[in-house]
Image 1: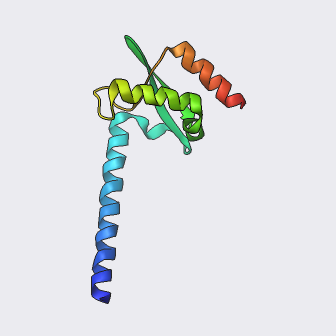
Image 2: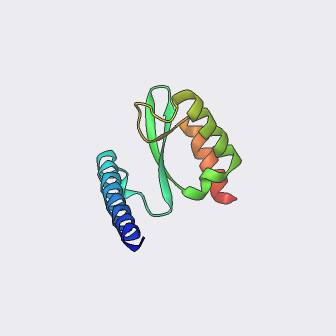
Length: 104
């Protein structure tokens, strides 16, 4: 029993190292490795252009942003060619929303 648990522990450590290496390489490729801790990069997609914003993770729990995330899921799904967390709205709307959320 002790041998099996030790083997399981080693397998878990290998998996964690492997996953963290893959995540790090994906972040480096996407340019999101410069996002401060506790924040997330989101992209606002308005017909022809995409603009990057860095917002606190806590904003993702707000009902207004949840509504935008639901729209994003309906429009893009979870696996789409744009990469990153892409939100379908105008830049003006998103900056207004972010300003509102920073004041609450």
